[in-house]
Image (cartoon, one colour):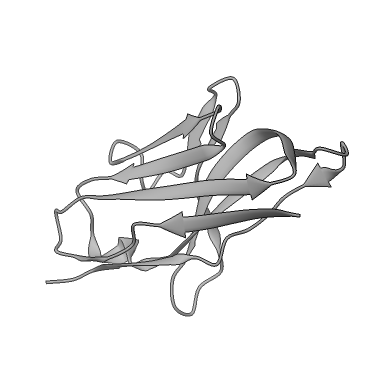
Length: 120
């Protein structure tokens, strides 16, 4: 089995910064695309950012210029640096990875989520 675990969520004031981390473990052969998603109360889960193994990055328009996604291929980990946080960034943040297990089966594990609250 493959698992991913998020960490780094917290309560932060508007304008503040946070760094979220995601670590994958288990029978992993390769994770090709790593991503961050979020779900605010009463809303659907939405894409925040993705990064491919080759470094191609995609951001939601709402976070461009404020959030930065990065990855560590060696350690199957990825990160989300969030700056200039706004109250509307409040949500549960989830990480997700697409790739292949050691048996070459497709894997797409989701973490349990980490709460980010932006409030004064």
